[in-house]
Length: 311
Image 1 (tube, rainbow, N blue to C red):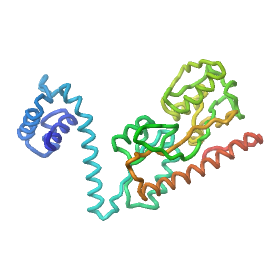
Image 2 (cartoon, helix red, strand yellow; image 1 turned 180 degrees about the horizontal axis):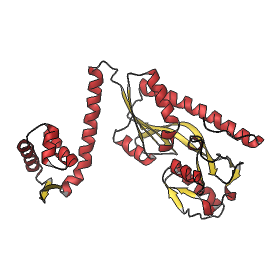
Image 3 (cartoon, rainbow, N blue to C red; image 1 turned 180 degrees about the vertical axis):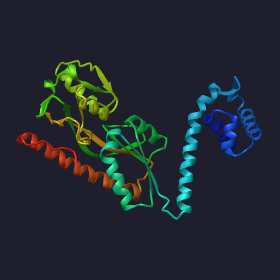
Image 4 (tube, one colour; image 1 turned 30 degrees about the vertical axis):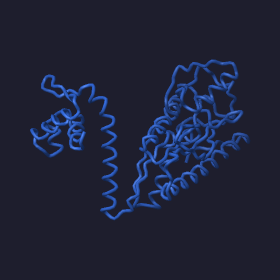
């Protein structure tokens, strides 16, 4: 497919009609129709079928549209870069991914400090799950990703940032630390099986001889935390999520302590430049600040003092 073929195909898929696609491309409808016919002749198969006066994508069109979307994302990125250069900006752009709980806690402050220090650069941040970050890195869609847990994947390297404590959220409890065996399994709000926190907690349950089947299972730490705010049950999440919202139940440390590793992932064939290193330095500083607050939380629980609450 030529670029013009791709533009017409993408526009039809996005708008749902040849007429609207022609308007988006600022060409006549016969011209767009001619390009579509030429694309189908070149490919050797149809991209659309007419049904009730509408263009319906064929199976082949549905198969190739993800690749076409990727091409247009790269074209948009290239346009932003050339716009930066034309406007005299640095032309630097970072595209990073982070797990959702960090997108609600540390990463916004990192972005704030980064923008204050290098206002001429552009930053795109996507919140997604660890497996999606790995996939996007493998497709060169991200400069680096911030994840929980270990991700040993061919072609990727990791740099450990910190071990993030795990805490219990339970509106019926106000004092910790709490032993896993003392948690009521009937009120347990579980995380998805591929979550590193779920792995850690599940292994402890199994060592204790419990097969816990949560009545509620969610994919994100912040969703589990929100459910505890409503008094629905209890859960264990990363401490950054727990300290993000002052309306959440008091975060309680665990006995023995548990933690999840947080790392930065990047491609082995990608050299992290000075711009990215600057952002990572800010990230590590924010982690150090939060971990200091978490140390205070643990000391206050041990001494019986009032718990540390979110800023």
